[in-house]
Length: 130
Image (cartoon, rainbow, N blue to C red; front, side):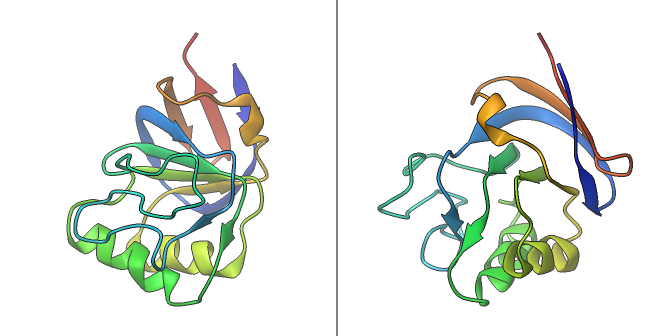
């Protein structure tokens, strides 16, 4: 299955998908030292986003969340790529300063955790292996 979105940050990545059906807060919601989701309201709480392709509808919370994404990258615990339905400023800025490929405008309800995906953020394409 191929899904089309729009580039926020260019680049390519492939790997295992982790999908949150709920908006994600990075400040206080993701541990920058471990990459573990700690947000009590998250449906992926307790799971690691490190070295995975992270998909969620949109970000929420403080602008400091951008720096949490950057800290995840510096600590080697960042996702390989980010797929979002709506790219708001917090997540977009974090992906930009961390250099994480990011695609927006994708219907994340069509994605399932554990699937293998290829992200070509340059063309805005997300390909899910069947």
